[in-house]
Image 1 (cartoon, rainbow, N blue to C red):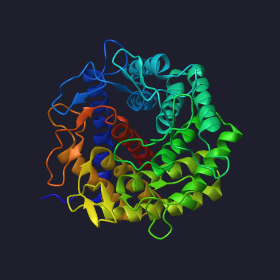
Image 2: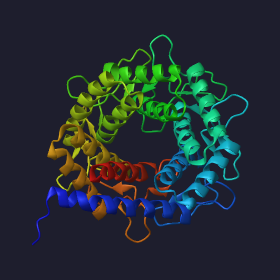
Image 3: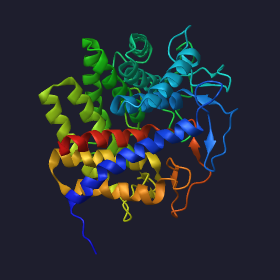
Length: 404
């Protein structure tokens, strides 16, 4: 029996990830494009397509990012064509030209459905527009991203205590129910939205070197170190009120490991050595805390409810994708092979239990008994190519640098 060394496994990691990226994006081109414009709002686990399904801003923004990033990495003309499809649909149907921001959902014909302003969704559109602007060399996309950034600074940014409020009515007036989804707490500030505003601003800074934007990125990094990262365990606080008082006790392993590398990415874009060193230290500690979420089969568990002392043992697709990158990142910083073994172990789990061997793409996940979660979608308001395509792209870049 052949025993593979860590170097052997790393050598195999790169071509496997390249192949998987192309398979993921091929699935979205083959099954999710809508002949009426944009992308289908829902494809279920059994590959049934729902052409009348509601379409979400988050889904379309994540598709735009994935195809734009795929093109920026591999110069595949089909990826750019599909990025154009997503961009045009967002531009024509999701942008609120009267009040600014983006609509949360539109119907199958592209007419506004939920017009609430969810900061999380606007952040993803900024993130995607910045990526698309590089792929398409589009000044229009940059200007649109800057305009949305201005909307967030004007309406969502908390001038007194910093941070961003969660949601508003269409006209940016106060809304009672600010929740991103039914499973979230109704609080004014959340880790999840701040993480993706940071991610969006980081990508925007790559194409728009604005000093005000730089200050906001630094402020967000400070928000994480001061309020969001638990100082004793290095897990994340998930929900907070306007004064940053913590309102939850649950631990999200996927967000812990995702934040560990996204925070460092933000620091590196700013090219500030002091900030980079500080965030590197945090990233390794957060990744170390995230190791608590690994199961014996190599997959990463979903959540730990500290109040109930209950571990949610579901294994969702996006958690695995973020773990692959986050542990690799921690290994690059620290040289601790535990992290590389964790990244490779999660990938082995993905290959065995998350990738759909028949139709392609990744299933939503496995339940606590290890059974496929067939009631969840392949494509939908929350199921998209962003986490898994990004993991492949990010790791391919890092592995290529190591190879060189």
